[in-house]
Length: 291
Image 1 (cartoon, rainbow, N blue to C red):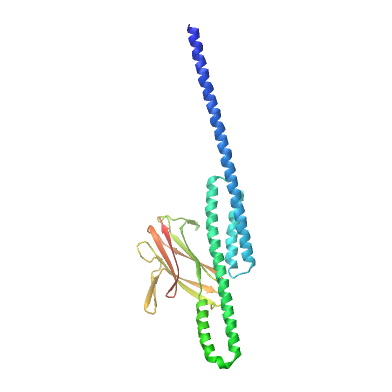
Image 2 (image 1 turned 90 degrees about the horizontal axis):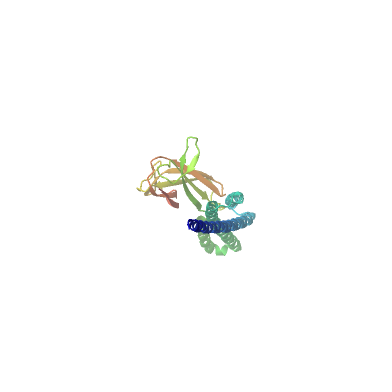
């Protein structure tokens, strides 16, 4: 009798162990299948990102071949695409890396769209200005009988040229940093760590504008509505401007990038406003946030 009970218990234990074994094998199979599916998905996303980057590089190559006034900017942005493409190709294709690379690509794509739109706009403006000049020159040569009319046309053209000759500021960008003892700048948006703020912008190429020294007044306003930096004041007619610093650019009718920094400490948390003035005229502004 006792032997029968013992055999029954043994059989029950064997059945339970068999069930557990089958369950473990099923779970391991599912985990293996899920892993393979995830790996295939990540590989597909990596290949698609590489394809998109190569297409964007080809688009930059085509734009640069036109030899536009923004060639320098286009080459700089193409270099960023090439650098990101190389990183993606070398990456192992994990989810975190792909997400980061996708975000970088989206930003570079926005920069590309803005740069191409600007390039097309400048080409249209130059074409219009050239047409207006040719038309006026022809009219002046026709006859002195139309002198009064031509004077009026010239005045209108002068206003057009004056407007076209104004320099455009593009890509106004702010980047806060922490400066290490070695002098290396490390990006950060944490107010307590920031001790350097870099302000950069691009002056667009303009064949009509007068070359020479260009002075810009940069004003950085903290969340408490205080101007930081030099806090110097300049008068322009009846108006006065309190600025953070002055930047001088030697402009030669070509696209050029301007970079300046403000050093400080105990920066307040919150939203900062940055304004760039050409004398008393606001020509660019943006905001950034410190947490």
